Length: 496
Figure 1 (cartoon, rainbow, N blue to C red):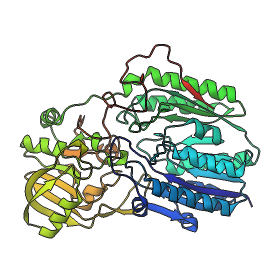
Figure 2: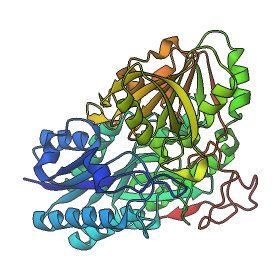
Figure 3: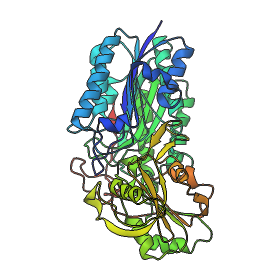
Figure 4: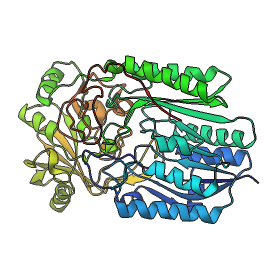
């Protein structure tokens, strides 16, 4: 029976802010060891297992850890997870092939490319002839080490992300086809210095969708095994950052380089379309009031927990208070101390709390808000889709504080926004609100796309801003777009 090892660490990290990711973060989200992995029926691991079982291959489960984005993984946590994964891998040898479900935008303290390191460590153990197939988020930062040490890399194809399972299947099928001698993967990545947020990164419509359609159309060629389009997770600060295309051909490296270069050049040509229009909260609220009906979505992407922010910004909350908005508004804020105060006071109590900017105080200062404790919850909910579809997770002790017409969802723990699960848990119906603050750059489309009367992208302080024009990177060197509008004689960087 064909023996296939499976394991990985799947985490998106942020150099600009957010809290460090430690072992407890994984333990509260997803940390499966050995045979615990075999129960996966969704997401990327579930997709891989489904193909291996159908082919009657033997999966050798190692370790799989995933969590909501944050700051870099602590050194101790990363070393512990990496070492355990590799120890389990050593115990599983010999293997016929390896599947590594990773993210591509992980960071560890003192290590800007932990995924490249993991791939290299696996390669060192199996030698040059055992195929290694890697799956990544389409927001991955592809590095030279990743490309040189893996036989094939396949990225998710959808944003909002909904094809992790299918990508796991694609990766497993390519690995099995390689082992059967049906193909000889040759891979090239071409990158251009376009560092933009995910606001216009939808694969449903818009500029990135059109780029994705072109990229995937190349798979119609008989000699192309896979293509991937990468929109960099822009909140890292590493030297090799860039967006572009990755192509895997059947035995033709020159063709892979040619096609990947064409994708990257096209990406550069359309770079301006990927930059969003933004408004300060006060202006957005004024514009939103004039929009008939509702809800109006105020996209405070600079405080995106799914991109590594702490979720504790009150920038838009304060603007709504100062605007004396009288219609119903929903605003999420992560603040464990304020949530605890609400629980201590009890439902129906009038209370004044210090709220905001305690978990990551670099982006503002707390303010006092008085209101009524409307709802209390243990914060447990189940994701309805995405990476953790069907997984039970929690926000920790959670409360709804009514500050006039504003319903502030105060949670103790940052969680990824897939749809509207967090609001629904505490009885907040999005359809009846005038303003909803969405702290993510894309998934608000799933939650509110059918009911929204308007959407306005905000310019607020935070580690996941809508534009990277003004970010002061230390390692990433100029020129890059959007800090530099034009770059004479630009040539894509080629990785093989």
